Length: 330
Image (cartoon, rainbow, N blue to C red; front, side, top):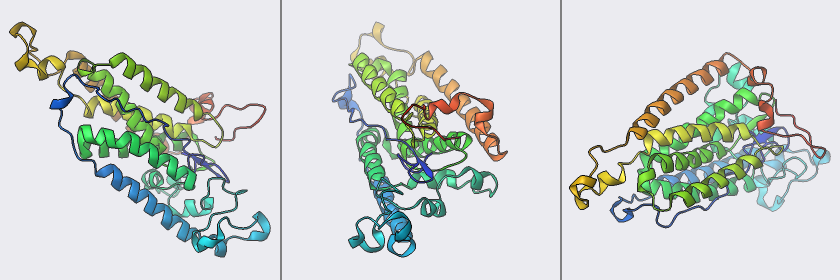
């Protein structure tokens, strides 16, 4: 995960631009009125926690005191005092130095593997490289997360968010070994992945299923493509997306439409099973893949494996070199 969604300005990688989507189907279910609507409080709390953490980061950073202006230029917005930002030459996102992020828990392969600081797989999710990075991620979280929490409750969405974030951190650490990484984009892509699998596994209860599927796939592909730009940690995005996608089959499963409406349907049209055989198959396969994936990823990471040695082309998933920029993400 790069230091921010542009998380590599300076010496880190940002978990690239977060899912840019306000996809909120107005009436996705045949029987939406019967669906229980939860009050969303967890997602707003996560936003508050991230904003509060960024304030702490800037206080610790204290640019006027710790920055040598003769080398990189003056701090930005000095009127903010110790909350002022590093020079734009060092951080284009209006944020702290990479050394401050590293000190406060940014993901770094060497510290996870050699210093046994596995807690960085979690802490990096709540760090952001700058105001631009923070705002982009939090706005995306509000658009995506509140809707999901209203439909499925804080427990399932909280599990999704954290496990997807950790899944993104693991894949990022396996392939990004020379840069630090911060950001919530892995967790956000996990929510997007869960939206996709929820649509697929609950196919029978959707009204405008084809349009919803097409829109969601386009949003996901565009955001993953943006992740191939330099200074963006697309491995965090991919890891978070895959984790969320499989978790969606496990956590967001709903009874099929003919079961929900069994009291309003003729006897011959009523379903005898609450879930379809495909839902059971997807659930089982997803559990297996999640357990195997997390176990294999953690074992490889803690043994100090470099994923690039096992996949010579995978680095192109995070950055595609062109005549205008080079990639240094291994």
